[in-house]
Length: 562
Image (tube, rainbow, N blue to C red; front, side, top):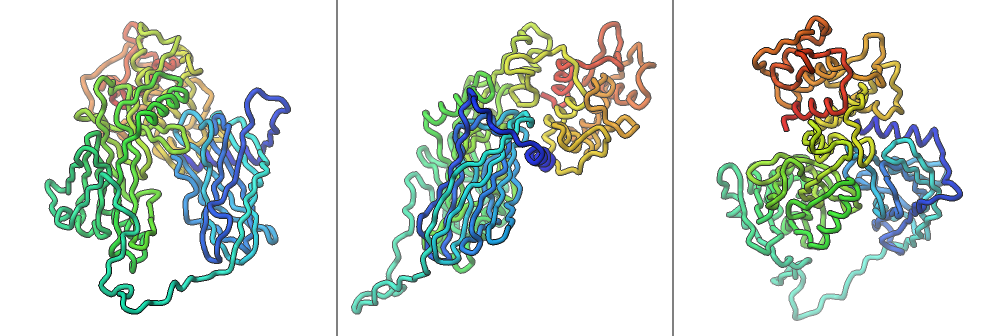
């Protein structure tokens, strides 16, 4: 699905060039370029940061950076961003003696874009030939969450780096009488052990109980220190680190993946650090304000907000960190008293700003979710209010809960239009979002869906897992209002994705069963017996009736078992 969304963004970028208006009420975005060093030695590496400011609803972007390939080499193996979403691998093209590296990113699943100031990318370069070289930000294409507004920016942002010839300092000559390096002296640690550190010994790492090794951090402790061979000592069992506000369960394979970043000859003596750093009150307040603005809702922080990190440092002081894990890490956040679980979930809070909903399972007073990278995470309670869905509305609770879980959104920030009709494309997108489907499926073969349509990726994902079909004439009819029997059939196809094979309950019959299409009859009977769908007045199912937004929300609510 992200690839389809990227195709949409890129096709729009290539097809449309919108100049900024001469006069606009919104402040124009600003893009800057900076280097970690103004002077480097030959074969040394350095980083270049691309920053955006005054950004408004930034959902996707494509950046083109120019450099001299004779003097610089970009490392395309490293991800340029840690933002949640989807980023294409770095792509380098050359025209004559000039090289361009492209950075392409889009958010996925989020309902809104990012705002304010944030880093857009970090690139690592290796210095090749001595001399002075210039990097230039040639072009930035941006798109909003509507996927309709595309802007092309040509910022005048440059960074200059001087490359000097390689020189190795031999150091002072040996002195007589004193111990030589490696002769009976211990080197000072390259980095001091942080305060509040708990160091685990080999004996502790081999003492598993209940299929895991568990360590409970005392109050005030936020760091766990491990030897580089922790993975082999754990021997396949996970490491469960527990603090007062939550816990982390690290698979031993993740620790092995981290250790492999260090050259084999340098691993002995290296130290692994796992950090669970609680946010300050000011940081939590800032996240609350940001979330309330982004979600247009009342927001409360519902747990300790942890900044999580995992790194390994060699004796020489070189530190390596993982950008993503090969196996998921289980994160558990204890919920604060007074928070409503049904309106809450775990959110990922990237350094760049914005929020991404992860959800999680609520059990024993805590939310539990699996993550594939470390950053900041917290539980948020989100209370969304729509002026046209008062507390007396039959679907008020359902709509409020689905909105809190980022499954449904309003037509505007404050209106939901519960009685409006739902199209086939809209319900397909809702279903894909509810199931958290994320697919690189090929485009669905329907004559009435273009790659640039906002729903193309969602329809492709739904077709791939068999949730939707076309109309039989090669069309999907995305803009046609969805009928109650069509919606029910889609729900029953989705059910096994969440719960396994359905089990029928007490049979339910409708007075108008004869008007239900044969292809939908079994699905309607099964869904009704399970309580997923209900009839309307007078025992009628009304299969050809048009479903409303409120009815769609109710059916999704029952499907996902909230």
